[in-house]
Every structure is written in structure tokens, then in C-alpha cells.
Image (tube, rainbow, N blue to C red; front, side, top):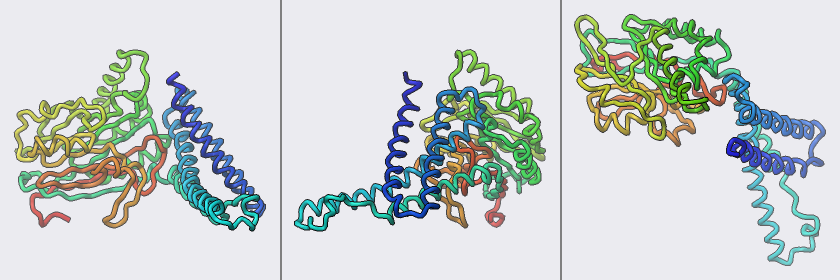
Length: 417
């Protein structure tokens, strides 16, 4: 019964919105040209049909589709829901105006106009405005599905660390996060992203979790792509919340555990050093810095990471931490581990949509995460949140593009940009 509850609830809400918006359009048919009528009518019905197909595919027969295809179905649902929701909001304003007119009729003697008998018609301006506003997410979200997923973008922060050993001056760290290999459908484009990454000639590479959506098998077709990652000081990785297989149904606990074991093995086969609540030392010219890696730990998400275990006896002048979820930084790192200089995270994807221009950035994800993209500093500690290499759910990006972080470490303020 529970399996059917969610899709039925969603379909019921969508049907209400569909009927409400369609009746609003139909009430003004006679005022529109034939071209407008055809555009609005069939545009409305097409979005509705695609959305229903998407819901059926995701909830009823989803297991028969690969993850990337389910993402497209989800995208269709999102496009329809957001566009119709915006249309509904404007129609509600129209209904409030109509209600006000009706109340005025009832409370005055101004009934001689015949409006009460014929009813109070919708405002043509509001209906047209609603249709235009609804068209914006249709156009932008659709475009984002074809333009955004593989528009890899470099972000190049520079960080000053007073205790940085001289041998590590100018250390170039490349970070990627949230690959979500099960969502990819264009291997050639993914390879071009790796080309861009390697062209930066990193000294060391960090991957901060979510290699897959759910299953280790999602990496089968991408082993040759990500095994290309290499750097003189190595490639280091951690697990993210999706890597534990918590978001799908398994036949039994043994299968789920076997999937996680296989995923851990894949990191090794890629040539990556997976850090599981442990630390290592990065050495260069007789000097060292500490690299700590924890399993996933996030507010409201899977919490298995043990930072106390990972950081125990880590003795280095500079300590870098890989932790998938940025909430870990405020909840524990800054409070209890003030000697951790920089924390590298991902997880948020920047919601895959938002605005970034000049020094300004905003995304709806900021309503959930205070620190959701880019570099943050509190006292002498830094947090960097990568916007993600891949995508999940909505198969696209708008404004918040897939990120390759190229961070350079310096000892002196004069070296900072």
C-alpha cells in the first residue's frame, strides 16, 4: 500500500493543478487568436502527459530503466510541476481579485450591471501573464538539460596557510565531488571534463564522495574514464551518502553490504587511495602535511564518519580534511578540531541551479545549507564546498555548472588573489 501512496498523492496534486490551470485557460479561449489557443491548449496537455508518464516510469516501473533515464523522467515532472505551480500562483491572485469583486457586489446595491447574473470573468491580463511566467521554467529547465550537465567550469581559489611547510608552497590541489556515474549518458563529454582537469597539472587530487547514485555497477562503463586521474602526490577519495546504497531497496542486508564492499574496491582499482576514518601524510622534500578522510557525516544524513578516529595522532603543521557533507564543518570540525586548516566537501550540488555572476551567488539550496558552494572562512579555518562534477535527479544544470576546483596553497598573504 505504501508503494502506491506516494505516486497517488503526487498524481492527485498534479491533477488538481492541471484541472485548475486548464479551466482558467479555457475560460478565456474566445479572447485568444487561433494560434494562441492551439499553443496554450496543446502545450498544457503535452506537459501534463509527459509528467504523468514520468511519474509512472519512476514509481511503477522504475527498476526497468537505468538511472540516467529515470533522471530524464524526473526532469519532465519537475518542468511540468514548476511551470504549472507558477501559473497557479498567478491564477490565485486573479481569484482573490474576483472574490473581492463578488464580495463588493454582495455588500453594495451595485447589482444593476448584470455582473452577478453573468458572473465575474477572469482577468485576461492575469491569464496571459501566468502563461508567460509558466513558459520561463519550461524554456530554462529544458535548455539546462541539454546545455548544463557537462559544462565543466574551473574554480581557482587561493588559500593562505601561515604554517604551510616551504616544500608545499604553491601546492596545486584539484578537487572533484559528486560524480554520480549512474546519471551520465554522454561518456565523451565526461572524458572531456577529465581532459580539462588533467590540463591543470595538479600536484594532488581529492575526490569528496558520491561516486554512484546507488549501485557499484554504475561505474562499470566509466572505469576507464576515471582511472585516468593521476597526480604526482596521488589521488585520494572518501565516501558520500549515496555510496552506502541507502536510497534503493536491496533483496537483503548481505547484498547491500556486498555492494558497499565492491564500491570500496573500485576506488582501489581506479588507483585512488580511499580514506575510511583515517589519515595519511603527504610528503615532499622531507616535509609533510596531514590528510584526514572520514566517511559520511552530515546533519540529517547518514552519519558513520568517525573524525576522532581519523584524526587521532595526526601530527603535522597543516591538516587537510576530506568530509563529504559541509554541515560537518559547523557541527563538529570547527567546534572540536580547530587544528584542521581546510575541509573539502561537496554534497549540495548547488542544487544544480542558481545564479553566479561576479561576486554574487544564490541558489534555492541556500535555504537548506548555509554553506553550499565555494570558499568559506571562520577565524583561521577554511571550508571549500565543490559544486559537483555530476548531477542527480534533475538531469541538467542552470547557472550552477559542474565544477573542477583548482586550489593553490600559499604561506604568505601576498600570494593570495
